[in-house]
Length: 219
Image (tube, rainbow, N blue to C red; front, side, top):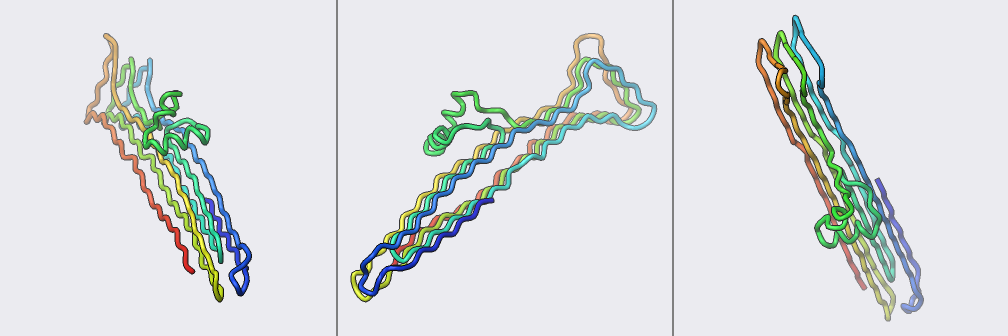
């Protein structure tokens, strides 16, 4: 969470003098994660109960950036925010270019994608379950981003009052995920269950964005 609020006041009765308020804020959040569950080259035989191989990825980003600039003359406010989940860290220039293009072109060119994973599997193993057999991959990663940038100028004088408000907001939110569940054997291995066999993938990742942008000048 980043929050900045700058207020500048002054000037004169006749509108001379300069009052300047400037705010700049930049934030980068990067999360790389993976959840793997597996049975490999093993022999499992249960006399009671289930056999469950479950991978759950619940990683996430909850980012909040609030920036406000208020001046009696000139107000300038600029915010840069880059949130990535499942992408490697990049420098500010590459992030800015990708954000302006609306495409992870630069990040992809430098092999920046590293998906947040949930992978569950049984490989080359004899498994005999007295109950159910479950292989489940649940990818529930989440990115929440709240961005606000406001620049306000309210100039007042008997005469000759001038005001200016300039603001800029550049933000990028990138998410890459992968989920897989499977049973795979070469010849000679056997997987069985007295109950139900379930192989399930749940790719339930979510992105929530809230943004506001305001430039206001009054004389």
